[in-house]
Image (cartoon, rainbow, N blue to C red; front, side):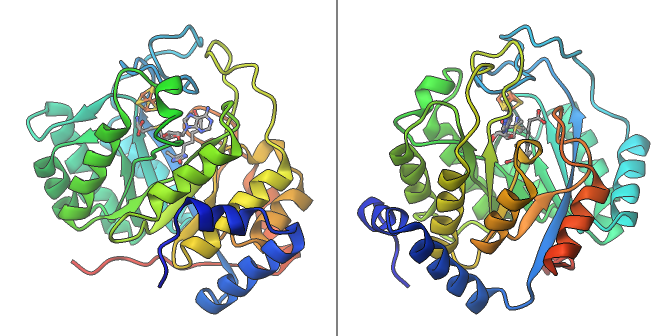
Length: 319
Ligand code: SAM
Ligand code: DTB
Ligand code: SF4
């Protein structure tokens, strides 16, 4: 299989729109014959007060976003939410924490491990997003039952310092390496609509195409402008630019789950349908993301039904 570099990604991306989505559709049909969408439920298990200065994030302590800082949720609350998510049809449960990262020596990390052991018994794919990891912390998460680790590169290496200064793009790559070495699948993507160029988006995709193994899932978030953050006034992303990026990602990473992630509340049903046509095959499901709004479950189920799309079953990695 060819590994796509920036010129080849640009050649795909800049095709006439219908040629691009047709090619993406053919790639999708060859690799994903079931026509199913994966439903993932998110839960913020530790909200707010984060030391990092990510310019898009409501949870950074560097900005006055009005969000209350909370401590780690107790196991029973998390388990209850996970059970509800499963009952509602989710096949993947993703727990997120607002802190710089964890090491194997943290008390809070021990508590997360205990939670993962309990949630992994429910039969859903278990994903966590806990920031930076040491190789040993990654191994312990894998042993506890984590199937996937979400750690986004968010944008191009060149644009990254414009949105975060408290850690580097290379720090993100190091954590991703620890996750791969521990045998968890990597969920890695980014955000569009932060003031980056379309070339920055393709450069981000170029980095994702160098991962070995390739990322199992690629979340494409449209910025949710959070009041109080430096990006609160950013205009919405153009739908055709979003569809082009999804289509190019589908072609470049044919086996990845391409997740139409944050920002769906600002997309029309027709816009989302185009994203699915172009190869998106996963969404966050439930009326809340981590702190921001997401479409209601009924609206999503109706949309999938009207489009004739099924819901995928969990793919649990063998230990
Ligand atoms: N603290 C961990 C980290 O930074 O990896 C995990 C949580 S963090 C909120 C997970 C991802 O959510 C970010 O990397 C970013 O891609 C996405 N995200 C956060 N705030 C967002 C926003 N306002 N709009 C769109 N995506 C956002
Ligand atoms: C990802 O790429 N998007 C999710 C998940 N991974 C953790 C988070 C979206 C967060 C949107 C803003 C919020 O809820 O605060
Ligand atoms: Fe913290 Fe993650 Fe938000 Fe950055 S994106 S401020 S690391 S919670």
